[in-house]
Image (cartoon, rainbow, N blue to C red; front, top):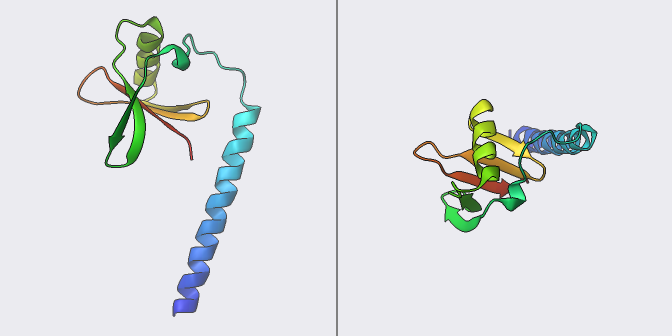
Length: 101
């Protein structure tokens, strides 16, 4: 029985590696960004939550922040931008970002 479990675990891990590789290739093939903002111009603060370290921003005076917030709303409050997974917090105008794995 444990041989079957080991084989399934190895197969799952291999498939995850393949999926990650395909994501990387797709990212390089994506058209140039059409975003109206630059997430590097947003002021980010280091933070840590239950899922580890991340950065957050409440830079409401920044045009880049406001445009990013609008884009997040259009994408169900989460999306990938470049090398970052970005999300909108539910409770207020706060955005988080974390490097993709």
